[in-house]
Structure formats: C-alpha cells, structure tokens
Image 1 (cartoon, rainbow, N blue to C red):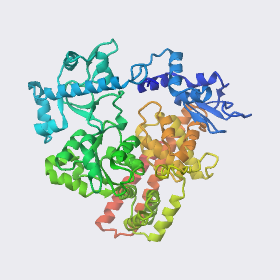
Image 2 (tube, rainbow, N blue to C red):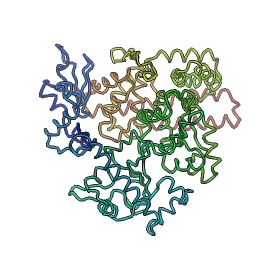
Image 3 (cartoon, rainbow, N blue to C red):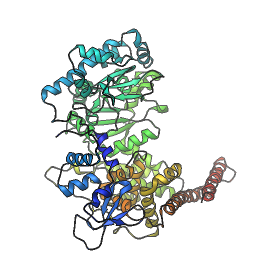
Image 4 (cartoon, rainbow, N blue to C red):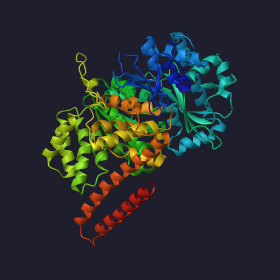
Length: 617
C-alpha cells in the first residue's frame, strides 16, 4: 500500500469539517458552546451521549467511550484502512494527494538499490566539493569547531555549492534521473515542476544506516543570505525514516556491542557526535532532527542486545528549558531499555563540541564519567521547585518525586532511591517508603508492558473518567480549568496560559492530563487532539471527555472570560502556597540576618505579583 505524504494527511483533515462527515450518518444538534450532540452510531442508546467538536475535529461518546478524529470515524464505520479513509476525504474536497513512494507499491529491491546509489553519488559529490575554493566558509566552519580535514574525511563531511542545479547536473551525467533524485530527497521540486538542488551553500553530513549505507543528509546553513532553516535534513523517503535513524551508529555499533559494559552516549547534534568520537567516546550517536523515541530505542536494543542489563545509555542535555524537556521525553522511554540510563550535563551548559574546544578531550571524557543516574536526575528535577526549608515544601517535594521512585522496576534499586530521596528531603525513610508505595498503586500508563514476558498479557490500569473522578471543590476547579484550556486555550493570553498550565494539580488523573497539555506544542493545528492522544493510557479517556464536555458558560465570550479568570486563580493559588512557605521560613530565621532580609524581599515581590494578577481581574 502506498504511503501518503504526512503533510497531505494533515491538510485533508484540516480542510474537512468532521461534523459534515458524521452528520451524514448521525443527526447532530447544537449542544453547548462549540459542540454538537447526537445518538452514538457505535452503540444503542436512547439519550444522546455522542459529542462532536468541529473546531477540534474530535468526537467522543460518554456512553461507550468511542472517540477519535474524522479518519478513525470512517475506519470504524466503514471498516476501511487508514489510506482509504484519507483518499476518500481527499476525493470529497478535491485535494490532490502525493505519495512518498511515487504513488504505487513500495519500491522493488532494484528501486531501493537505485535510491541508495543516488545517495552514495551525492555524498561523493559533496565530499569532492569541500576542497573547492568556494567551500572556504565550510572549511572555516569545521576548523573553528576543532575538525581538521582528516576528521571531515572520517565522517564523510562535504559541501553543497551555492547555485540551483550543480549537483543535479553532476548526477544526471552519471545516469540518474530527476525522478530518482526527487524520490531520494537530494533535490526538490517546486509547484511548477521545476527541479533544484535541495542543499545549497551548506556544510553537509551523510546520514547512514546501521550497515553504513548512506540514506540521507543533514546540512547546516553557512551564509547570512540563506533564509532557510539552520539545519536542513533529507525528507522522509522509502529508505530514510528519521524516527529509525541514529547518526553515527554505523561508526559506533562495533564499540557499543563489544563494550563492557555496553555503553551508548546520546548527544544532540552532528558536531557533538564528531567531538565525542575524536575525544575517545566512540559510542556516541544522535537523532536526526527529531526527539529520541521508541523506534530509536528498538534500534539501539538490537545493537546492544536484550541481555544488556549491565549496559549504560547516557543522555547529554543542555541545562536550558529545551534540554529539560528533552530529558523528560528520554525518561519516558527509559523503561524500554534493559540497560541502566544516565544523564550527563556539562559545566556551564556547554555541549560536547564546545566543551572539547574550550577544555580539551579530557573534559569530554569527564562529562561522561561524571554522569548521574536518570532516576536521580529526575528526582532532583522534581524537588528543585520546592522550598525544602519548610515542612510544606518537603511534603510537596515528596509527593512530586515519589512517583518517579515508584516507577523503578528493579526491586533492589528502589529501596536505595527511597533512601536517596529521604536524604535529599531530610525526612524519615519510612515516611518516604509509604508515599512511594502509595504512588506505585496509583493508575499509571501501561509503561511496564515492554518488560513483561511475551506469554503474559499486559494488565491495563483502570481508566479514570469524569464519572469516577472524586467530587471535591478542588477537583471541580481543576476539571473546569482543563476543560477550558483544551477547548479555548488559543483565546487565553499566551504568557498567562503558560503560567497556569505549569501549576501542578492535586488529583493524579487531572495532573496526568495537565502534564500532557504542558508538553504539547500548542502552536500546531490540532494541538488539543494531540493532548488527548498523548495523555497516559489510564487518563486518555478523561482527556477526551474534558475536550468533549460542555464548558459551563452562556456563550463563547463568557467562556473565554471565565477561563482567563480560572487561569489567574490557579496562579494565585500557587502564589498563596509560596507565600505560606516564605512566612514559615521567615519565622525560623533571625529578622536582622541576611537570609531574613532576602526572604522578606522575596515576600514583597510575591505580594506585588499577586497584586498585579488581582488587578487584571
């Protein structure tokens, strides 16, 4: 079956009104702000519980739990494949689809061989151009990062000349067709059918699969007049799947498999891989323009071997916000490894390439040797936002960090990390143990499924729904806030929205949905549906219900005003907790001490912030 270009899949869905499609089978009537309701087509019912939200392209039945987007609706109703569903809707709106594999069946082996040959020829061309006079900027770029010609040759680094068709004509002379080059992703095609070099005026790295065959390229901008992205990669092709590719793995695999312990160092870019290898860390690899994910784990596990219980996977992250988010994503995948995972953060926030430049190879080696276990890193991250000088702060930190310890699958490691957490917090180990045991019994995503024997069926955690959510004023406030944020978050002032969704919630299910919302890129179309899809398994139903339920307001304008007020109330509540902690700390230190004066200044600033928020009401 041909694979439809992902951009086309998203465009067709964006142009389709889900209510029109569902409305052909279900009589839909207005039901609250931005919602429609009818009898569920998936089960028999007398009272309508099937809700559709056209603005978000989403449906959910509060009776049977069925939910999804317009594609899943067609697949369920008409028993068609995903590709057939996309094709039907594209035909409905007259949208021409493009297929990544040329519109027909997947390429034969001979076709794959031709694409690999195109990539190999392109690599040779780029490498040959690195010595040309025009490539002075590329050579200076590499030299400025500590890479001499031998290093460039070892990694196959090259240069793509300026101009629109230099490589195109060079490969045509070797017998490659324009269609082959387009399919391989080394050239691009404009809307008028014109073909031009994809990589121009850039330093270029060949991206190879684990066997060493070049399957794509990564290129960095060199010139100020280049208005393209800083880094440009090969698009998805029949041979290049970025979610399955790890840069440098072809060079690192032998040392990974032979190591004792087997060790993989995951860095963030091409130059970081080069710096690590040249510094002696020859097991360094990097993803190619995408976050580290489950398919990367699968690739690494094949190289490391599933018997690598004593292996090590070391992630290097920048200490900034993006690096912290990358660490959280990596932690989500940590459980898929048999190996132990660690985090290494360089001093002063330097990445491995800059660290090598400023402090030498030994500093890069030291970065890896001074790694911190992933669980310890995540514990420290969780408790960093609490004032451990107060009882309230320590209790809050314990409740925040206990789920991390509860997720440790090694029964010998967990008691040790309970003691680590107790020491960090200065609390009785028995109190920490009780809270960890409590957290381990809370509903979780089916995160241990990969570690169960194949003969065992994974036990799914019970789903949490609006009906099973305990009815407390706190839960009601947080429930309504999440409902409003999912449905009208685009109407909330961005900085206010960001601050509000960063406030932790009290009920684990609502907190799980909040975290999914906080981690979602809200600049992309369909972000609310993405929150539902990314929510932990036991909380996905609740997330869907929150997106589909009616928000208690008279009309949309009143809903937006109410949601902005809820956002401010959440922030004010968090500030009130901080104030209580500061007041407790002030009482425990001498009034005329430096610490006391600092705490009073913090209290003054906090009161000013609360006053500003209150004035905005």
